Length: 205
Image 1 (cartoon, helix red, strand yellow):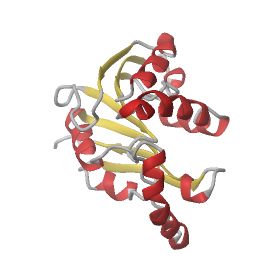
Image 2 (cartoon, rainbow, N blue to C red):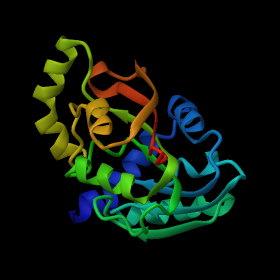
Image 3 (cartoon, helix red, strand yellow):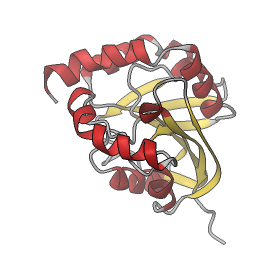
Image 4 (cartoon, one colour):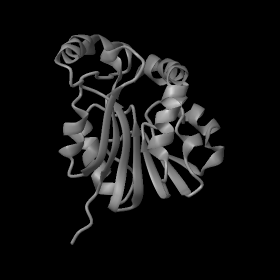
């Protein structure tokens, strides 16, 4: 990961992602959660203050040491256990967590398909993935610009892809989308086409 990815970028993202618009998204994504939660890409812990009192424990995953240190300072409102660094190999048993949270994370994971397979594995039947992710825009003009800009953005933003097909990735994981909203944030369009929603692990008949 290197010094930039481990120490500098997490602090920059903490400043960039804590604004009111992002906070409103975080409040929606975490609303109504209960039980045991696993959060991939917990980052600096900006979701933690939004977790309701019905959350019993959060298993937090993040590769960056500086991010985990910042997140620990925001963990007072909910029990948090920092358990791993790789969303592609989650440190949880099969069918063991009630919900998984992912906010602005799938863009950066090297193999998002493998990460989503792990999400499916650890979710209890009936459990949900709650997510807000930026990705490939529906507007072809924006999408073309995203494709052009992604190689540079990956170098500057720790591997972040602007053009991942989030809907297709989640639909291909075996999880069933229960709702999905797409929209632009108030940032430049190439950076901000957002997929926000939930997908559930089917309960066996």
